[in-house]
Image (tube, rainbow, N blue to C red; front, side, top):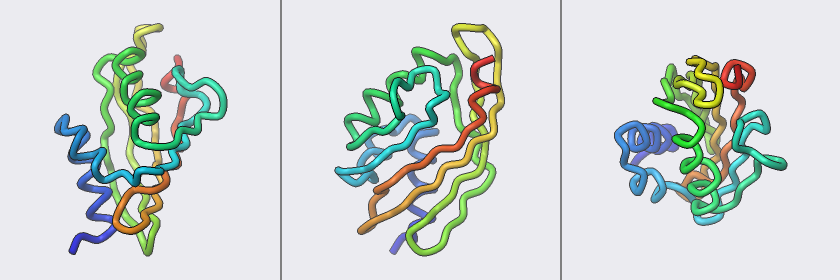
Length: 129
Protein backbone atom coordinates (compact mmCIF):
# COMPACT_ATOMS: atom_id res chain seq x y z
CA UNK A 1 0.00 0.00 0.00
CA UNK A 2 1.25 3.46 -0.91
CA UNK A 3 1.82 5.98 1.86
CA UNK A 4 0.40 9.50 1.64
CA UNK A 5 3.94 10.74 0.88
CA UNK A 6 4.22 8.18 -1.95
CA UNK A 7 0.90 9.41 -3.42
CA UNK A 8 2.10 13.03 -3.45
CA UNK A 9 5.41 11.98 -5.03
CA UNK A 10 3.43 10.12 -7.70
CA UNK A 11 1.32 13.21 -8.39
CA UNK A 12 4.44 15.35 -8.98
CA UNK A 13 6.01 12.62 -11.15
CA UNK A 14 2.83 12.45 -13.24
CA UNK A 15 2.77 16.23 -13.72
CA UNK A 16 6.49 16.33 -14.59
CA UNK A 17 6.04 13.59 -17.23
CA UNK A 18 2.95 15.26 -18.71
CA UNK A 19 0.57 12.58 -17.40
CA UNK A 20 -2.14 14.98 -16.27
CA UNK A 21 -4.89 12.31 -16.24
CA UNK A 22 -2.70 10.27 -13.88
CA UNK A 23 -2.23 13.26 -11.60
CA UNK A 24 -5.91 14.20 -11.66
CA UNK A 25 -7.07 10.69 -10.74
CA UNK A 26 -5.23 11.20 -7.42
CA UNK A 27 -7.38 14.26 -6.62
CA UNK A 28 -10.42 13.97 -4.38
CA UNK A 29 -13.55 14.96 -6.38
CA UNK A 30 -14.07 17.80 -3.88
CA UNK A 31 -10.41 18.92 -3.66
CA UNK A 32 -9.97 22.39 -2.16
CA UNK A 33 -7.15 24.29 -3.86
CA UNK A 34 -5.61 27.48 -2.47
CA UNK A 35 -3.46 29.27 -5.05
CA UNK A 36 -1.36 32.31 -4.03
CA UNK A 37 -3.13 35.59 -4.76
CA UNK A 38 0.07 36.96 -6.32
CA UNK A 39 0.04 34.49 -9.21
CA UNK A 40 -0.74 36.54 -12.35
CA UNK A 41 -3.79 34.49 -13.34
CA UNK A 42 -5.49 34.55 -9.92
CA UNK A 43 -8.49 36.81 -9.51
CA UNK A 44 -10.18 36.96 -6.14
CA UNK A 45 -9.05 34.75 -3.30
CA UNK A 46 -7.34 32.00 -5.33
CA UNK A 47 -9.67 29.30 -4.01
CA UNK A 48 -10.83 26.59 -6.41
CA UNK A 49 -12.94 23.51 -5.66
CA UNK A 50 -12.85 20.29 -7.65
CA UNK A 51 -10.38 18.96 -10.22
CA UNK A 52 -12.11 20.66 -13.17
CA UNK A 53 -11.81 24.09 -11.51
CA UNK A 54 -8.11 23.45 -10.81
CA UNK A 55 -7.46 22.42 -14.42
CA UNK A 56 -9.36 25.39 -15.87
CA UNK A 57 -8.13 28.09 -13.48
CA UNK A 58 -4.58 26.90 -12.73
CA UNK A 59 -3.10 24.24 -15.02
CA UNK A 60 -4.50 25.69 -18.27
CA UNK A 61 -3.24 29.17 -17.33
CA UNK A 62 0.38 28.16 -16.70
CA UNK A 63 1.36 28.01 -20.42
CA UNK A 64 -0.61 31.22 -21.08
CA UNK A 65 1.48 33.22 -18.60
CA UNK A 66 4.79 31.32 -18.56
CA UNK A 67 7.24 29.69 -20.95
CA UNK A 68 8.94 26.54 -19.68
CA UNK A 69 7.10 26.47 -16.37
CA UNK A 70 8.15 23.57 -14.17
CA UNK A 71 8.39 22.56 -10.54
CA UNK A 72 11.79 21.48 -9.24
CA UNK A 73 11.12 19.33 -6.18
CA UNK A 74 13.81 19.50 -3.50
CA UNK A 75 12.08 17.30 -0.94
CA UNK A 76 8.75 15.76 -0.04
CA UNK A 77 7.99 14.65 3.48
CA UNK A 78 4.95 14.04 5.61
CA UNK A 79 3.24 12.63 8.62
CA UNK A 80 -0.29 11.35 9.07
CA UNK A 81 -2.58 13.13 6.58
CA UNK A 82 -0.20 16.05 5.82
CA UNK A 83 2.51 16.01 3.13
CA UNK A 84 4.79 18.94 2.28
CA UNK A 85 6.67 19.64 -0.96
CA UNK A 86 9.61 22.05 -0.81
CA UNK A 87 11.16 23.22 -4.05
CA UNK A 88 10.91 26.00 -6.58
CA UNK A 89 9.14 27.07 -9.74
CA UNK A 90 11.16 27.82 -12.85
CA UNK A 91 10.20 29.40 -16.13
CA UNK A 92 9.96 32.71 -17.94
CA UNK A 93 7.24 35.29 -17.34
CA UNK A 94 5.79 35.93 -20.82
CA UNK A 95 4.57 39.43 -19.95
CA UNK A 96 7.99 40.66 -18.78
CA UNK A 97 10.40 38.27 -20.47
CA UNK A 98 12.17 37.68 -17.15
CA UNK A 99 13.22 34.16 -16.23
CA UNK A 100 12.49 33.15 -12.64
CA UNK A 101 13.45 30.62 -9.99
CA UNK A 102 10.98 31.14 -7.15
CA UNK A 103 10.87 29.30 -3.82
CA UNK A 104 7.70 27.25 -3.47
CA UNK A 105 6.13 25.15 -0.75
CA UNK A 106 2.98 23.08 -1.06
CA UNK A 107 1.08 21.58 1.85
CA UNK A 108 -1.24 18.71 0.94
CA UNK A 109 -3.92 17.08 3.08
CA UNK A 110 -4.97 13.59 2.11
CA UNK A 111 -8.29 11.93 2.81
CA UNK A 112 -9.19 8.34 1.98
CA UNK A 113 -6.13 7.94 -0.23
CA UNK A 114 -6.83 11.06 -2.31
CA UNK A 115 -5.36 14.58 -2.44
CA UNK A 116 -8.13 16.55 -0.72
CA UNK A 117 -6.58 19.94 0.10
CA UNK A 118 -3.76 22.00 -1.43
CA UNK A 119 -2.13 25.10 0.05
CA UNK A 120 0.53 26.97 -1.90
CA UNK A 121 3.17 29.36 -0.58
CA UNK A 122 5.37 30.78 -3.34
CA UNK A 123 7.66 33.75 -3.93
CA UNK A 124 5.37 35.53 -6.37
CA UNK A 125 7.60 38.64 -6.32
CA UNK A 126 10.27 36.66 -8.19
CA UNK A 127 7.70 35.34 -10.65
CA UNK A 128 6.16 38.76 -11.39
CA UNK A 129 9.41 40.66 -12.10
